[in-house]
Length: 73
Image (cartoon, rainbow, N blue to C red):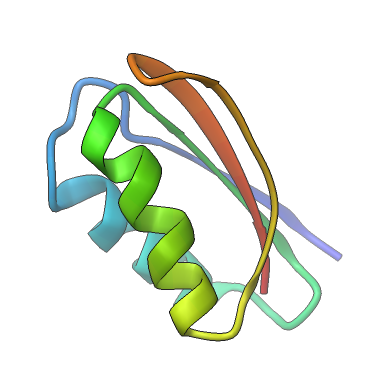
């Protein structure tokens, strides 16, 4: 199992979601992708998009202006 971290701090929509999707496409089943970001809308959008894709959102932590989302592929 690999752990992939993407740092999208300072980026606004749709960059964090696009980068998250790219990483998830490269990840193998069971891999964990962690997205770091600062854009409040992306903190809500990324988990919704992942759930829609049938992926497991393990954890969402931090405030709206500095957050971390863990997703299992």
